Length: 347
Ligand SMILES: NC(=O)c1ccc[n+]([C@@H]2O[C@H](COP(=O)([O-])OP(=O)(O)OC[C@H]3O[C@@H](n4cnc5c(N)ncnc54)[C@H](OP(=O)(O)O)[C@@H]3O)[C@@H](O)[C@H]2O)c1
Image (cartoon, rainbow, N blue to C red):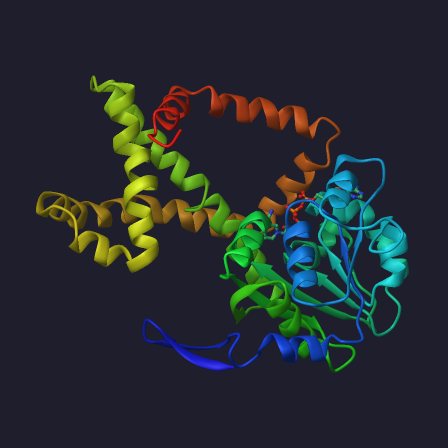
């Protein structure tokens, strides 16, 4: 572990320097890693592990587009690609990478293959934390571990191919073998993480649900919509409103924030922009703080999990989702966005 100062707070993290790939390979040399589910995280983690020299197989239900995708990615039926139950039987580490609703449905089947000494791996604390609602209660004689990449499986793969990595959190919920910690860190390095920071299953799911409902997705769309509407009501054109709300942020400012931080971006914009941003960010913070408190309380009370399980397990879930996405897609702001994207010079 390396001790790093995060804004005055010391944290122990794992980097590839203290835990190089050769060490990860040594720790997992006798393991068969079964990736159960080949949706978004499955391909990213499976391909990165394989390319990093680990012994990987994929478990995916047959007669689905996802099975065909796995074949197209180079997994060979009967050798490295199997039906879920066969992969679960062969694997010593089972990476449970189905959708959260899929995990609930498949759990009664999967648990039969969790023989003593195996490891059950998650990329989200959801199933274990909300066990009353998911029914996911692992046997006591297996390791239960987590590596949660902080981003999409697609980015995990792309960054790996570019020689970079997504940061991930890791956690041990149950250490039955005495090897859970080295197993989970080796897997975190193997899937192509940047650095690894420690958490527990509950903190992982609370922060994840808050983040996606908050600044990563929910809050940002809400703030975009409020500003766009205000500009439009005051007579600004869609082009002007979209550029001042979204396009400038994603194309110009956020890449600078990603590289050097918000302070640097503030320091390198016009003095008029600086003054205004410094005056107004605290008002937005005060206005939204109660909403974030409400959100966190809802997550901690299990209400967000309950709502997501109830809606995701309905048979017409996809249709209803498509209706809601259609509303977003057909809103003037995102239609304007589509027109703006087409006008980008490289298109
Ligand atoms: N999305 C991300 O980038 C991301 C980021 C960090 C962590 N995570 C976590 O990683 C895990 C996997 O997420 P994901 O987004 O990769 O999932 P996903 O794409 O929704 O998973 C789809 C996979 O689950 C299978 N599946 C769904 N229901 C099933 C069922 N009832 N029986 C058998 N197979 C079923 C699908 O098979 P079919 O195609 O045959 O239906 C497919 O292989 C989750 O715990 C998630 O929270 C995800």
